[in-house]
Image: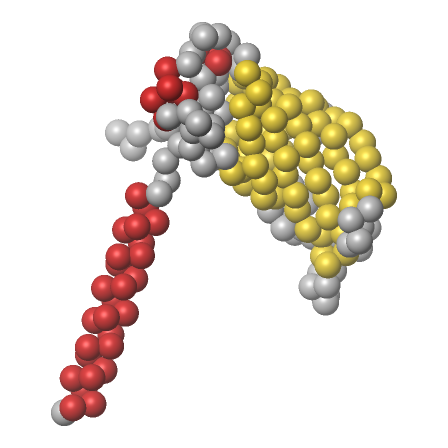
Amino acid sequence: MVKNISTTRILWTVLLTGTLALGATGTQAQPIAQPGQSQERQDASDEHGERGRPWAIVGSWFGTTSNGSRQLVTFHADGTVLRSGQGEVSINPVSPPHTPGHGVWRYLGHGRFGVTIWDLFYDVNTAQPLRYARVRFEMTLGDDRDVASAKAIVETIDLQGVVVGSRTGSANLVRIPFEPLE
């Protein structure tokens, strides 16, 4: 009987702690102002029209690169970005699998955003890391803020951090709209 009461108390404690942790995490997802600048000031600084809003990039986008590769990119209000694309899963040793891309974005002004994304390529059989890819791009929003274009530099980086290859590219992006169930 004592063992059951003790087990029940432990389970309730774990459940309550987990619930509080999830609640605290949910309240942290807010846009971040620049140092020395309140959020009110940043949201109000729309000196370049709607395209100039620092948070206009936030959301998910369909992307197509200049070589025809398709991607899904999500920009978060906290300045982080996630990218998934064709070729992440592969058994071809010439084009090994890689993780989704993780990175950060910053507002550059006049409807432009700078983005840096990293992903890790690995051996499909051993899961050993092989190399990194770093993608740096500048994304410019269209007038309606639902389309964008980007120019990019894609670098291959070995495990010691040395750039061993580089190429340029471009992409067009279209915002994924909300579609109600109706």
